[in-house]
Image (cartoon, rainbow, N blue to C red; front, side, top):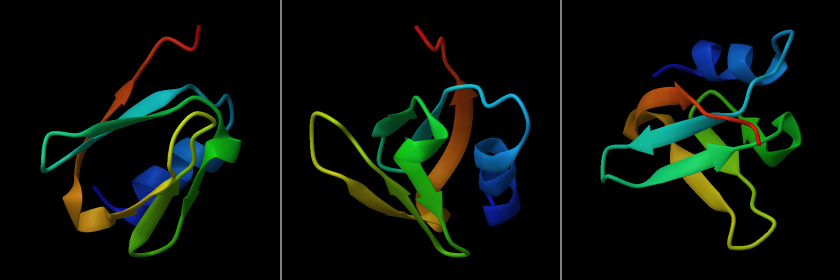
Length: 69
């Protein structure tokens, strides 16, 4: 997964919620663009109910669209 792909999902028109899958088996939902920030090496995923996560882009193995409801 590269920075441009993540950035396009966050900033592109018609945002759709997505899930990031990591190399260690964990997954993080991004329900709204305000819950994520990305730089060239790190993605920050924010949560209303738990701790925020800083994720090295090298550990993101896939991105999946999820139902926004």
